[in-house]
Structures are given as C-alpha cells and as structure tokens.
Image (cartoon, rainbow, N blue to C red; front, side, top):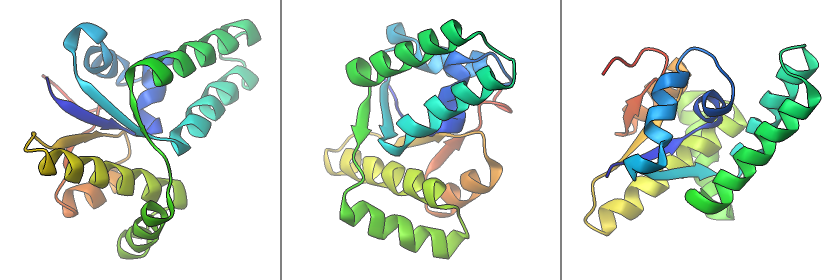
Length: 155
C-alpha cells in the first residue's frame, strides 16, 4: 500500500475522461488499498471543474450532479482530507513566495508536505504527489516530494 496526495488537477481525472484518467483510476481503485490524501480546498476545485465541463457542453446536468455526488461520497468515505488550518496557510504562503505558486496550488503543496511529514513521523513511507501541473510538480520536487504526473506516467 502506497500513500498519495492528489491535487484537484488529478482528482478530476477520476470522474471525467481526459488524458491521465487511466492512471488516476488505477491509483484510486479501492482494491489497491492506497492511502489517499487531499486538501479541503480541493473539494471546491473538483466540483468547479466538473461544473465547468457541464456548462461548456461536455456533460448533461444530471451527469454532472451524479459525478459530483460520487466525488463527495469518495471524499467522505475513503480519503484523508487536510483542513486548511492557520499553520498550513502560513506554510502555503511561504511556498507561494518561494515557488511563485498560485494560492490554491500553494495550499495543495503545503498539505502534501504535511501529509509526508506525518507519515515520516509514524515511520511510514512518504507521500507521492499526483498532479497534472508541471510547475507544481517542479515545486514539489524541489521541496523533496516524490511526484507523479498522471498525463505522462507510463507504468
């Protein structure tokens, strides 16, 4: 069992068919028994992404609502969700400055780093960031995180 931190750019691929969906679905398969982490801010991003696809004609409204419900159910029942406490926001602020990241991107990176530290303290293997954004992946690698881009991943 491995531990993964998913940012919204990767999570969306579980619910919407696009480049990298196969990789994400393999990692999120419940039978794989992976530990999955995500920041609470990702809830908003994933729902917004599914809704944008619906509004642009990619999905029927009922399909979009069904996908959103499925995502929210998975989030509650299977994933570890990091709340954005003040200390995490402070770390995200520092990461935004250090790596020129957008706000939510810095928040995801801070949450992924925190998940990795918690696993280290428990003498468990680290966390791999699953993200489809090259700039965020470069920042994560610079901070010592393992990264996996589901778009370019080839097993």
